[in-house]
Amino acid sequence: MSRVRYARIFWIGAAGILVLAALVALLAVLRGDFSDTDGRILLTLAVLLYCGGAAITGLALADRGPLPQFGWVVAAASPIALGLVLAAIWAFVWEEENEPWNKLAWSSVLVLLAGLLATTALLLARGRMLQRLAMGAGGLAVLAAAVSIVGIWSEPTGDSFVKVVAALWIVTVLAYFLVPVLGRFTAAGTSATQTRVLAHLDGIELVATHGREGVIDLRLAPGERLALRRRG
Image (cartoon, rainbow, N blue to C red; front, side, top):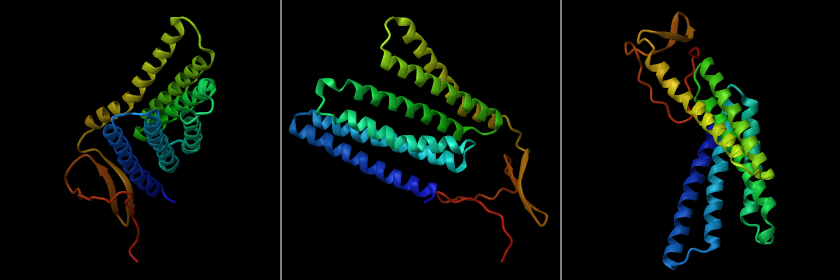
């Protein structure tokens, strides 16, 4: 199954999840009571969207990204994180003894968040320099998630550890948003006459350009790509 087919399934599922979440909220309003079960259902739907989105970005990176192996890791980690979080949400049996499941759930959420930041940064990067920045942002996200998970399980006292975690996440978010911002800055500074040859056939070149002369306005359907081939 192609990446486009996976994406279509995800967006159809996302629409269904949003409709179901709205129905649950409406029923709670009409009943005049928002029960614990209603909250668990809404959390479950939110987690499905979160883990599904991470899986799709992982598959997209595996399909056309600079680090396809990392994309497969993120895609494989998504259902594992989903199972751990759902176990924590619906663990009625443990009641007050549910703390280990809660720690596992938060740890999996942070691991998946690091993967999501890394994959989307790599997908947004254009050019070697921005790809290195995206890899740096992904490395910082992994480090911030790891330190946060250590804090979840060890529960350190004092403000110094919290400050370290906050500083790591601030630097991670900064590096992450610099990827698309610098990408737009680089594109804005490119000369309108600059061209890049993509392919050629019998003296005819397919070029990428920022100018408007000789440009064909092609509107591709979702999932379509340009191809150059001989007639017949």
